[in-house]
Image (tube, rainbow, N blue to C red):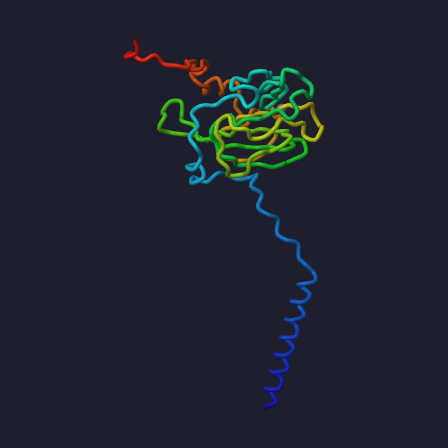
Length: 230
Ligand SMILES: [Zn+2]
């Protein structure tokens, strides 16, 4: 009987302690776990399979062939890992101009990874191999220093679709678009300058290999003559 009384006392003590801990937990909030940062991921095989097949790429500013733009700092000049695309007006004249998806792709990163990058977008594309068209590989197009981001992570975007606007990374640079092309499935903001090219390839060379056929430069005639017409 004495043993039972002790057990009851212990039970009450434990219950009281439990309620006290719960109350303290309500008052003293533990810091919430950091949300998963999608900036540093490798695309899974399923995610790669879900990437749209992109067979053609165009310039991301001006017209599809980069009309009214110029390349102020080409790939590998000054250890640069991309192209710095500018409106022909120079200075900040292109601030707020449209930035277009270079190819049919999926948004795999949209955010501000570091002050020097400003707002940044990464699209991933599945591109047929040059030798055997049945095989594909992952290509990323990167758009940085943006003023505004107009798309969301995981969104599908068509080639030529507006995805953001040209910015200056909160006044750090004269307005321009830092544009890179990267190979492989590792999604990481990384760096814009390095001694080695890392996984970057020349945007100008890549676009020259994947732009539309020469006929695409011409608009089709407004009416097609038919053989039966008099
Ligand atoms: Zn740059």
